[in-house]
Image 1 (cartoon, helix red, strand yellow):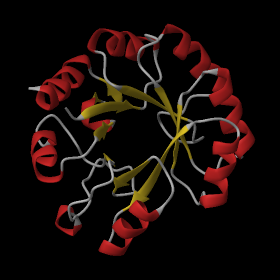
Image 2 (spheres, helix red, strand yellow; image 1 turned 90 degrees about the vertical axis):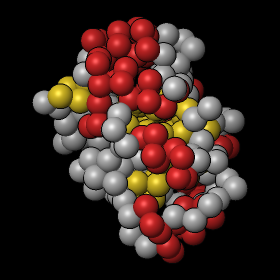
Image 3 (cartoon, helix red, strand yellow; image 1 turned 135 degrees about the horizontal axis):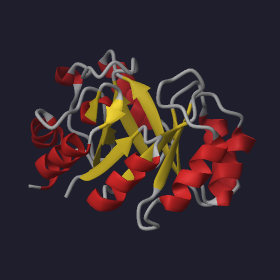
Image 4 (cartoon, rainbow, N blue to C red; image 1 turned 30 degrees about the vertical axis):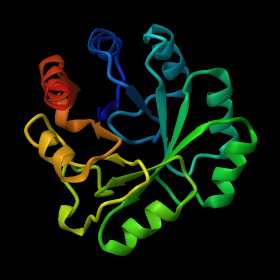
Length: 198
């Protein structure tokens, strides 16, 4: 069954929703200036309230590797999701610090972007539109892949089933698609998860 990641949790209320609904992953956004940004300290506090069975993913853009490693080793996050110019050497530095799972996001504008995504030495590529606008990337560019991947960008309770049936991702990743007025909405989170798991 396709896994589910709910990204951009930032309130205790969001954690309560997650603990009740039990997605496969949740995400903390560590990019200053973004609406869903949390500090390292806030994330540690929220992680302490999160069901231990749910892995937390840290979303980073060009964060110094030592900061990411510190969060992984402290148990604040279990997975690093990279969205900037992090290269293969950066990924290798994270791996040398422990057997940590790495998700590498790629903005999909053409078929070459998809090729680069699947060639990068991450545990999972993540395909997105790269804009954080809640819009899908051009799904017509995608061709069947053997390597498991995360799919993001514009997913919602209304279209996630179609995305799964067309592309068979390992996991689907949603943020704004389960929000109302910029905040996580329990009913939308539940509807999204029901659509995936039905």
